[in-house]
Length: 192
Image (cartoon, rainbow, N blue to C red; front, side, top):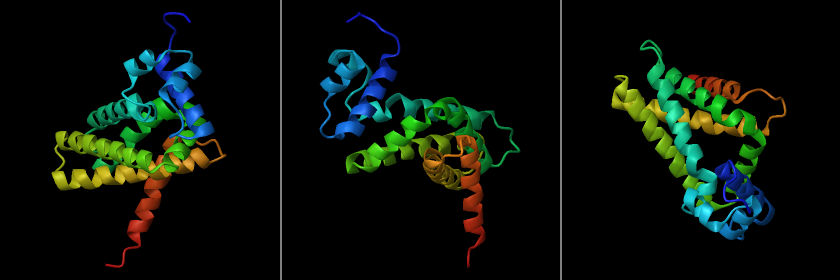
């Protein structure tokens, strides 16, 4: 085995997703993931704290960075919800668009495991917190920032699901817009 090969993180994540899909999250070991990727356990632990992080690690951090940067770049006239949508779309374009099949497989793995679902909710909460701070830095009051962040996380959750399941080939950014329009329609039906 060579001492260094490119994209160790990507190879480890792909191997983890394949093995989790084949034999289940609980029955898959770090040693199996490393072996499937053609790497060592030590290399695995250089990149991830545990096998859960192969599903959640750098992707969540990078997504937060992209969303926050795009929110900060929006003109002051852009509404908080639209700024959040633009941030989510920017992250979608860079991180997810070319990985539809992997995203769908990842979601199936997470949906099948309560521990992973809990971890996914924690990652969504961290994204929401980052969005709140980015909006507050733009001068948005805390209550509005919290609502806009919650809307953003909900919109992303719905859009990711429809995009991963869709056979129409439409980009995730369009599914994000559609999910926000659907939410507007639901809110417009209020009975108060």
